[in-house]
Image 1 (cartoon, rainbow, N blue to C red):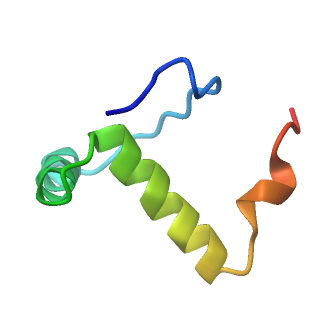
Image 2 (image 1 turned 30 degrees about the horizontal axis):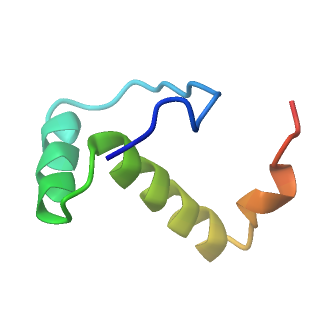
Length: 60
């Protein structure tokens, strides 16, 4: 499960109706928390778009 002390920055966004429930379902299928599912999904998308998230580590 997620360790809340491991991640320092909070990111929030508004979503269309039903998206939160869809994410819950997908996360359950992968035995992940909702937060971990979203983190991994965003990382995969960033890499697909040619962005390495590690290059921003420690940047405020």
